[in-house]
Length: 285
Ligand SMILES: C[S@@+](CC[C@H](N)C(=O)[O-])C[C@H]1O[C@@H](n2cnc3c(N)ncnc32)[C@H](O)[C@@H]1O
Image (cartoon, rainbow, N blue to C red; front, side, top):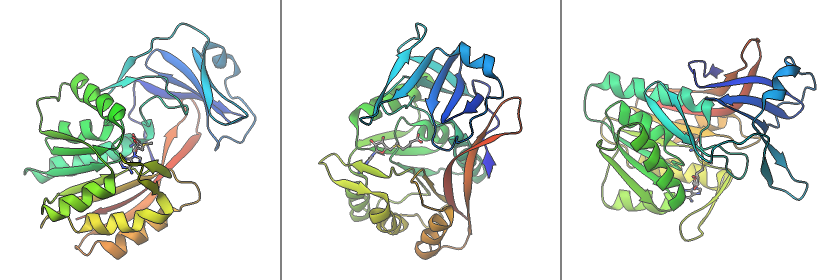
């Protein structure tokens, strides 16, 4: 497992009984996490410091309960990247901190290449990966079906002082967009995707991970440039092994290279505990 251990502005302070206590800059949040099935608290006194808690409701969904007066938006940094955080529905803050593993991987690959690199970032959400790739000097095409998420991504790019870099924001269904790029013969040196388990395109097209991932990877393999550098899939879909991502890459990517897969996770401060968060499959040349 790769563990995202280079954070200064984020840490897990404790985890117990279905919840994690996290510090995001100066703000301390409690959020649900289904992996945390143990009951013990290692630092019970730290839980009293929480500023807000995301409470699940029995009818599905949930809401944020503010214990202290937290701002609607605040910022944290990861190296030179600046992200705007907001307490959102579905326990989100706008950043998946374990994905620092993926950002570092992409930054290193792009920087090592020492040539102009074109990246396609699919299901790009609030653009953390877009800012990472721009910071490494790549040109990025950022695709997401949600206008609100694309606006948020632009804010993160601006806060990271990268708005002058070459970035194209596309509000579209991922599958439709990739089909169009194939017709237009628009090729990419690196493709990144973080597909949800279930999602909707701009015209309510249904995305289901199990049904659609294999076809999407196949389509994407057809818009790889003559000298691609990597193809990265991240996933949180329950029940899917990272070996499955590796198999899909092995079947579809014919270029010579290395395929690896595994889990990504977060360390808990002042302990030897690690929280498994998601999986990845990577092809790299
Ligand atoms: C939960 S996010 C993925 C996690 C995120 N990339 C991150 O930072 O880790 C999924 C994103 O996919 C987008 N999405 C879902 N279905 C889509 C589709 N069919 N086409 C384009 N974007 C889609 C959503 O709007 C959302 O921003």
